[in-house]
Amino acid sequence: MVIVVTVNMVYADPAEILNLLGANRTNDLKEMRRAAEGVENMFLEAVFERDGARAADAYRSIWEHYRQHLLAWEALARLREYHFAIGEYRTAAALAETLNKRPPESIPLEKPKSAYEGDFWVQTGAFSNIKNAQALKRKLSDMGYTATIIRKKSGGRDLHLVRVGEFQSKDEARQAARKIEESLKIKTRLLVETR
Image (cartoon, rainbow, N blue to C red; front, side):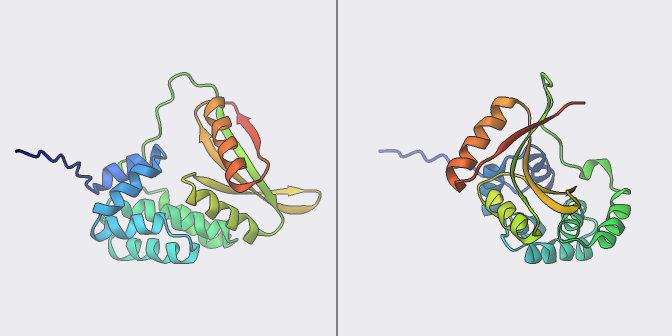
């Protein structure tokens, strides 16, 4: 009797990590994390880290110690997002200046847009307290979504809007909205931006 075993090896290639990030393929990144070693492992652990400060420390370490690595620029971009999200705008601006020198090969590829309809987003919350927005962002990240916190003035006060997206189609956004509403027991709102 012969038993044939097929093993699908998932290699943690830095370029593939960037492409999967750009395509928002969270499940594939989670699979890749199992095979990752070295810098790739540090980076993927930070991507899925729930504690923003710990993730920021890992991204900072990657940038400081592995600057020649392809993932270092993405680590720096995520570090800039972190500082912006916690209100450290000067630090975020300084990091943005460095990011302006980012080589094209270090930028994640976007999902191809075949029939462009617009950029669809799901707004999941609006908070006056940034910590509440960050908590919701973490929950959404745990669900596999890329969430963004946007600061907006409304009625003379700052609001922190938590949005998920961008989605390629209205149907994709609606499907995500339903899943988020069912899982988190919250109301969402579909947004579209056209160019």
